[in-house]
Image (cartoon, rainbow, N blue to C red; front, side):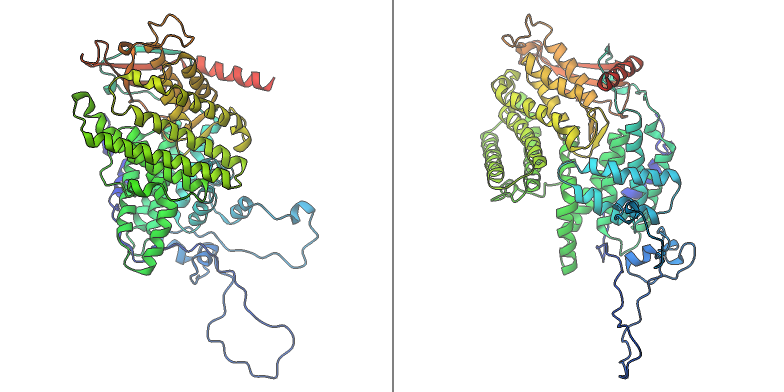
Length: 594
């Protein structure tokens, strides 16, 4: 195993982890530009004696960065000393157009897009500018999905203009997204070769692509981490900048497919956020904490859910109690999203707790009381969401977001209903809910090309979990042969990576579970379901080390000797013929064009 000191980016990561408790005196970032004009009057000299100005006249010739920061610029060319000595990037000087410019064409007179205006003053290499352009035009809107457009398409870009660490982080995110699309995303993995290996967890996994450790992306990533560590040495460093950087670093690790460093950044950011929220003495701090709760904390709450699904243990008390998770009414679809995330996190903590005890007969009366309370809160959430949809004039895109939220609520309903049971056959009574999940996912999948303004087979990377993990859940827990195959069909038709969930990987692993469970079935029409002895109780994915790793490790728990028998634990590698899968993808593209 390679030592930590030899891994290219780990030394820089350690610099980030050392600032997990950042105290700050001034936790705000000014995003407004100093563009106000002087109030002067035209005409000849006045006979009245004007009073002397009490303040110095505003200077319009400073660099763009200093004007945004609202500080005096020393106007050193080509980059001012005030920016370069503080580690910031000087964005140069704005040259106003001549008044007697020639008449322009209608296209030139049309207001330029935000993307074009921002790139006019951004300095960098052609590759850096290309990555920034792709982030603004494609990656940011894709990351925004249904709820976070203002965050990914405005706030992140504004702060990147004055914070070098954020600037280089979005270059890395944009470049990795661009590479993902140019490579055609992941391949449909339809020809798995299974290899039994009791030591699967300890076998190094090969990577089928080199962009996992792409030199350019890593250079930008390392630069961002180094600049952030330097920035946070300043006692006036903004907590919001540290939290935003953590979100972007998690995004980079998601794109690279590295679980461990992604969750290290998440835990560091969550620690900063919770520490800041406890400190609310000054009025300024109250405003900062309000922005953190509204703009930053929801990201970390959603990352906690993803972490628990991948075996991460939260080492802190969840900041929202069950009685506060569902408000009296939802004023927007985003309110409903934040509420269901709270419910999912609270439910998942309880489900993991009872899951460790139910096979030993350790459940108590209070466990069942808690289950009823969680189920009641979930039903209350559905009622509030229905009221929002009925009374509010929601758009078509919002209706699609509502479908996605209902998918997560249905999965939560099934999971809650079976949490205290050890028989896998208990899931059979939830076939209507499984079918509803599949139908909702199918309707969303049909609209993805229209809403995301992209071809249906183009690679998509999302920060949040949407349909991939729920469909994987249907694939491994719904034992109706036709329903689970419909779920797999949606996964195979998708080209999506949602956080650490890859649609191709999910389809292949769920397909392997289906094969193992249905080995003794004589018909696939639905009249016959797998027996309890053939069903798999739990799965764990251990091989997510690269976006397109050609091999995935899978650990499977079952009880072939009955519920009172021993656990049978199987470790497998699913290895894929990459060349053959590339041919499949090319045939699909040709078929779509024809």
